[in-house]
Each structure stands twice: as structure tokens, then as C-alpha cells.
Image (cartoon, rainbow, N blue to C red; front, side, top):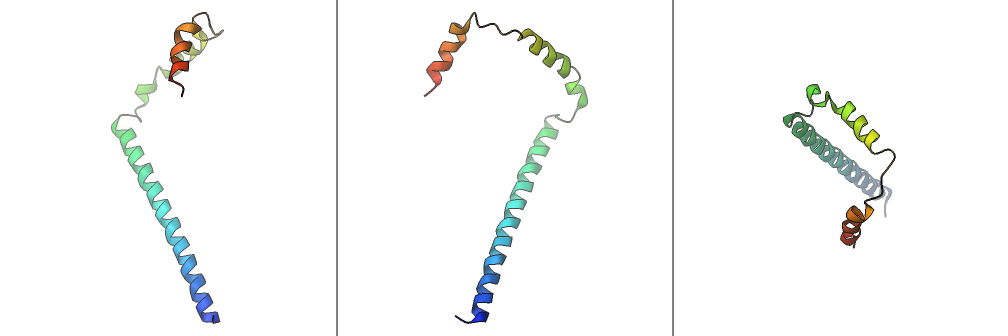
Length: 84
């Protein structure tokens, strides 16, 4: 194999790698764009929507402490039956 042929092969391999990387970046950007548009369409960027989120989360956390496992048979059974 001549040096020109080897250089040409290396150049083709590098160009293919750059093309694949560019395609992956464009695909990721497209998916991210669709997710952002769906989030905006659903009102995900509206701060009023999250106005009472922190107090609700804190109330749920307070209600969960200390954990109450007295009814574990009611919720534990269905959880174990669904596991493969």
C-alpha cells in the first residue's frame, strides 16, 4: 500500500467519524428542542404553576417522617407480586 493510499484511508475514516459525531449532536439537539417545546406548550415555564410546590413538598416530607410501616402488607404484597 502506498503512503498516499494510507493517508486517503485515514482521511476517510476521520471524515466518517466527524460525520457520525455531527449527526449525533444534531439528533440530541433535535430531541432537546422537542422536549423544550413540549414543556413550554404544557406550561412548564409558568412560575405561577410552581408557587405552592415547595410547601407541598415540605408537607409531604414531614408526613413521611417517621415512616409508618404498620400497613406494609397492604402495599407490600402488590409490589412483590408485580416483580418478575
